[in-house]
Image (cartoon, rainbow, N blue to C red; front, side, top):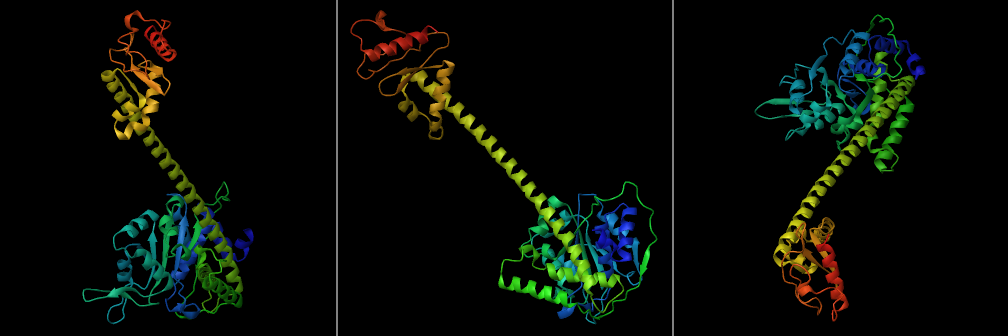
Length: 441
């Protein structure tokens, strides 16, 4: 972008002043353009009643240098007719209307102002207030529309094109949702500039002398070049026909470029016409704006993904804790029931558990068998389970006929009956053998 900075002497001066001040050149340039715009009379307009009012978003981490950039902008280029421009902290929509309001005689306390939101979080807090109109009012200010209302209690109303305003917002990339998430299109109206300067020299250059610019925009209409007219007409056609060629965030990008081009003309001490070179320079700055906004979107997307991953992990951990608790409850329920019943089939055990833990019966039985607290007895149709006393034989209890087998074991093989005793069915022999092995472990 060295060609951009060398296109006019004043641009090179702004870059050098920015680097000598430890500020980002793009942010300082945006500040100068905002100041020169704010210094003009609101009667100075673009064709079709287009306002010169601007919104500038200074993008960088908290403390990265928005304030430093704005201070450098005010010193790099001193405006002869900009000394009466007021600076106010951005407040409510009603407050903006009161700031620029005209009395019954048409007089105003403030006609030209730079409106600051040093941290986008502050703007977000204002926007979240119940009944807040701040975002809608910023969009109206950008267009030079009437703001406020007239009522019997108070006069808070500023007519169209009765005020000149530049809105300045400090934006941390991961906190830009209040602008980029505003579906009404506030982000479309912003010039996005980075506060950082990756190409800054290790050693700061000598601070140049401030330049004084005498531009007196007191009214009238600024003519625009044919190339700008064509670009605006084509862009408007794509938006009007919903052709899909225009990004939703670029609905006002061409008119924003025209405002920036007009600011370049003012910086060149011209109030009557925007030149082709002004338009080209504005195009270069708008490309920087598009890249800066895209970087914010990328940062916000990654932050959203991190947040979603964290939420997913939290949900998984919560579900795991709940599952562990239900499994523990299921194991306790099995043991309590077998303490009473002695031995039972799994379907009977299942019916004794509370409904919310019945699905954990299989896992509970598996862990209890593995730990030796319960004996699993294979039978022809499923398994039966018997409570074990640690270090001894199964607990006392009655065993009903096992698919036509013999009586229940009471603390071991009954009556000295061994697994190989004559007359025992094969399935009962297996069950008794299993019980004997478990009792002798």
